[in-house]
Image (cartoon, rainbow, N blue to C red):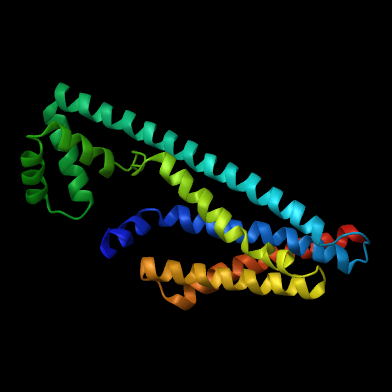
Length: 235
């Protein structure tokens, strides 16, 4: 597979990768931050085993839930779009003049002048399938078309969540639990969020600093909230 093909596939699943990866890092680190906050409140008996148990339970439970949720939402949106397109197809057979006028109006609303819009609508109207497809995409009331297999999008979400969500608990597998381990987890999570910002930047052309700042800010807010709640509960 060529480099261009890899880039195309990556861009195709970018939404699922970013969504799953960001949520994986944030929710798993929230477990670590929550326990760190509880330890700051002098709660005894909370250590690395608890972080690993709850971390892995959260990692796989949420990963499966997100993957299945992405599959179900993608499948539902796909079915709604297909239903809308079938309605447009039936309309092209029942009243081609109305469809041609509607397509011309849609093209004008997207920037074509009257004459060119009507010429284009007349030419495209020779194919009912093409006309139905364009109307289904140009009509503001139409649901967005969902491209790709919902199974693949769900799997991409799951894998991104598991891969990035594993990062915050790596220090608890490699070193004894303690304040330093929680700090390492925060640094590992920060690194994962920076990497995710780089991924977004490379795939979308967005400025690296902006993409990274957004992901790090979201992760930091969630981590701070989890730490604060853990500390308050422990009081």
